[in-house]
Image (tube, rainbow, N blue to C red; front, side):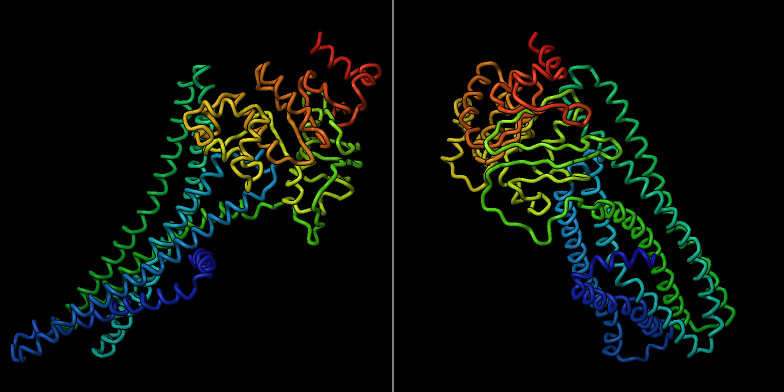
Length: 577
């Protein structure tokens, strides 16, 4: 438990003043509970059990007011302690979520190719929620329970000393150490089961995310029955994991209660045989109760901290994930670029799978360069290295002679526009989705970019024009409409380097013709990389690079390559003929 507690106290360090105040004020509540109520019970019941009725009424009222004053103090201190601990705990969770999300934004593209989206969502939501519970719900126990226990034990020692009942006191609390052993064993088991539960919850979230993202395919292939069965299996596994957590969580309390009841029973027997006076016995019995009760709460706290620490470890697996694409310590500042791209002896691999091997190429400023080759030949990887979505394993990639590693990624990407084959639109207005190309663009500039992409006409036909919400991933628009909005972003960005991943593939013939006309003007004076899957889209290419098995097989114009490159000729003939 101490190790888990240290983890959370370290998280609370930025709010240490508030936490210290909460612990101090909670300590007052604990002492008032453990020692104050015990002493109050002794005084109050001493008068009642005495039976003499010889005290003045005003004196009795003053003694009787002890309990209201005690509970007022306990209530106020408990509220303040709980409030400030909750504030600190929730602030920590807020900061943790911000930091985790910000860290995810910096992770390389390769990271997302090995992680499930649902698992990341679960860590950002359910795991932080588990930590929030550990930090806030158990905060009161953390502040109050230990001092309640110490106050009660102190009263036991005092009464034992005053009434020569030290042996009696020791016998009464002799069973307290026995509580430690089941608590340690059960919390260890609880940690294992809590980790398994969070992993099962991640599986459920991943399955749900995947299903919703493939809603069309599920219906097209009649996969509803299969998906229902898969999801049912996942939630059944989650249920089993949850019940194991429930078993170990709530097994702690009965064990502590049983041991406590044995101790209280022993206290009653010993007190009876020793002839302890009634008011003294009530005081000791109350102190015993307040020594066992905090142990019960602390055992529950130990379980919650263990569950929270396992969630924290899962979160730290992401936050400790290396950024890989590090920003330079002394970056080169570039205001503008011409667009010359150079690859020198570049090799790159996805894990053990080699994607590019010893590739060298030069693309002059203003050159429209097509990247062609069989699937998996390396053309997409080649293009993705230019915006530095990945870092090369060896060799260098440079723009205008500047090694990309010496440029800030933000500065580099400001000079590059990317239009992917499957563009992603955010659940926002059409105008804002276009404005992603340049976030400070005016409304008129957005409209002009849409006109250049031949998107203005269909946008005006939308219910709210440029203020129409496109839906998650642009589901309210057709594929061609989404593609034209993505192309409008590139027009708006007006970057000197363009990366087009078959940017016109989702358009109908008429729209494609218009886009090609627009591209003819857009590419003037710009360096363009076209990842070509269809040879009809590379007619404007001045240079063509042919990839094969991660290497450059040949490069040149269409005429040159058709005459001398067998691979290029075969690929071209397969599509044209």
